[in-house]
Image (cartoon, rainbow, N blue to C red; front, side, top):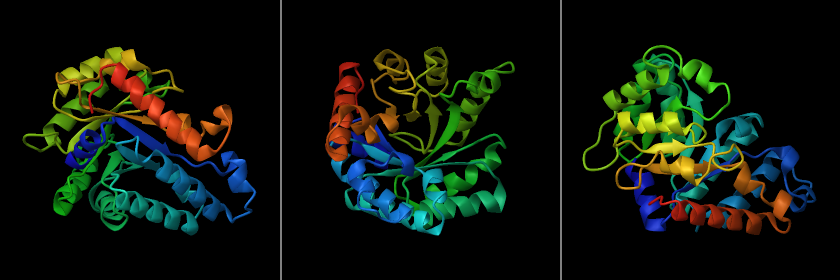
Length: 281
């Protein structure tokens, strides 16, 4: 996770900009070019990437939005990871894979090795076997990357499953993260996805994972704010990277004007809000 931590500190930002490009929501100036769909998505995402680069610690690519475009979409996915690396921005591949053994190893090699993402998100429902191949690939590559394990997500129905059992399932998953992560002097290479929408759960996960880096969805459009983020901080006031996707890339829909300028301003405002809430990058 050191690649993310170093970027956050050098840039003074705990913001992650999520690239979730929906062709139906592309701005007018992109649609008017009448490009093939994958090229239009590429144009839009590159504009966002270059606009927000000064304001964010990393970018998160939701792979599904590129997979849906077929082979040209995956070419765009690869090119955006490369473009982000040229800007020295770490990339989180939001793939939420959850298979085991050679299949998990193949996913890990694809997204971390071939495509070159810094980190991935992983679904741990099948246990340590679903997480270890990704950690092994991170360690083999030695680039300071990591694996974010889904622990306590921000979607409305998450509590029904993640809060079930005694102790709750999310606590068992947090224990798995603590067991599998390695690293001395910094963040372990296994981190946690912890939503901003259930602060009481977030506080408990922080108790169980005092040293881990959290990737935090649910900020802004889903209802999470500064008070919720504070419940996730470690003792140094750090330990979180906060994602916003729609709130940044589609800000032009409400703010008007150029989509690049709107995205940059949205990322800048979020950066300021997190700083005012006491979040240290």
